[in-house]
Length: 280
Ligand SMILES: [Fe+2]
Image 1 (spheres, protein in one colour):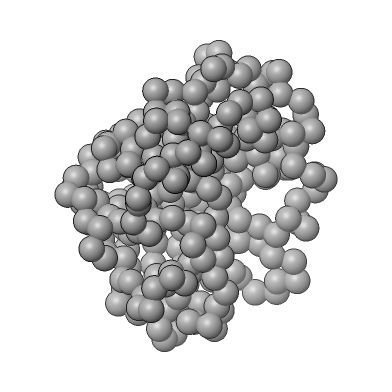
Image 2 (image 1 turned 30 degrees about the vertical axis):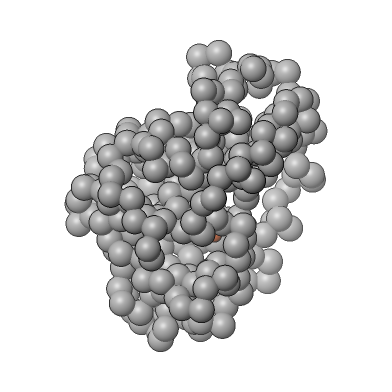
């Protein structure tokens, strides 16, 4: 099945149009019921985190390190970073490297969930300049699916809002975006907590993590620290691939056949991952 972006009405997102005009939702319900998947798993990689960390610092100098924005916020957010993908046709006046960072919907000028708006995750599919920088570019060139709304995310553990009592959140469904979370620099005060588990998890360098992000989760620091934590947060469209020359979205061979988590395990999302570990 193929969808031309030009045929998508302006008052809807690519994803909502896909849901409306295809059986993607039914396919997801079938697949999510027929697979028994872990809440979280990790896979080993061989990218050099020290090199990536240095290149991320350089990229921040060159292209910027942007804050998450919330209404009423007076101080710098404890969460900063830069976008790895953007939408050149976006209508919300966000610059290339801040375009896919989180922000309060109240701060978005466009009303509703329209095409090329902040909410149109599938529209945010063009690699930013920073995403091609040195080792960051080499890692992302291993992508096997369309990268959407992705970023470098740095937590600053020097503010109260990063402590353990911060709120849980959920993200989108896995048929919409399957995410890989890759620790680049971390420190032993930072933990990842999923609401279904009693114990927090320490996310280690050298591994790429994928979780069911419909389970409420959060990152926190056990105590205030001047050390920061930087991860790559990559989102991939598992079942629909974008073709830039045609400006079309097509369902791929995994559509309705393979669970997005299984696609990560099988190397269908990002190559260079091995040694599946579900015992975390
Ligand atoms: Fe999340």
